[in-house]
Amino acid sequence: MSDAAMIVAGAIACLGLAGAGSAFGTGLAASAAVGAWKKCYAANKQAPFLLLSFVGAPITQTLYGMILMFIMLDKVGKVADGAGLPCLVAGIFAGLAIGLSALFQGRAGAAACDAQAETNQGFTNYLAALGIVETVAIFAMVFALIALGKIG
Image (cartoon, helix red, strand yellow):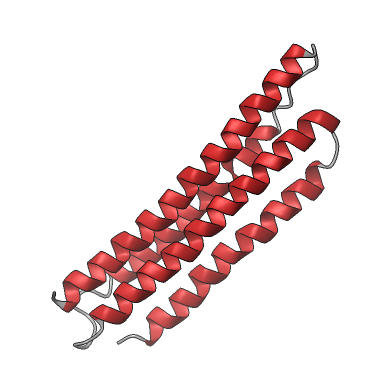
């Protein structure tokens, strides 16, 4: 496989893994939000619209994967021979870290949906917890960008 092909494969893997994590994470949180809303409706209680913020939180990891994808694709034809494998490895592992962050953010978001709907308290705390999980994805993206900057 040529260096260009490996760089493109790494870019696609990064976006795909990040996007898969976002899909799993938003799906988990959305399922919990629907269940929480159902409990509210059954109890003749107002269903909190705020739960959508927990549902949508894992979607940003797809953007981080996209940013890395564009940076990697920009390297095609501009780097020295042998750069393909490091770019492929960076894409796979950065995408995996970003995707897992989204998955676990969705799990935390699911718990936040349940807690917020039941108590109508703690929104800021729940959002802060999701932000900490998000930080893993940001770190993975930034450190991958630094590593990709050294490939040349």
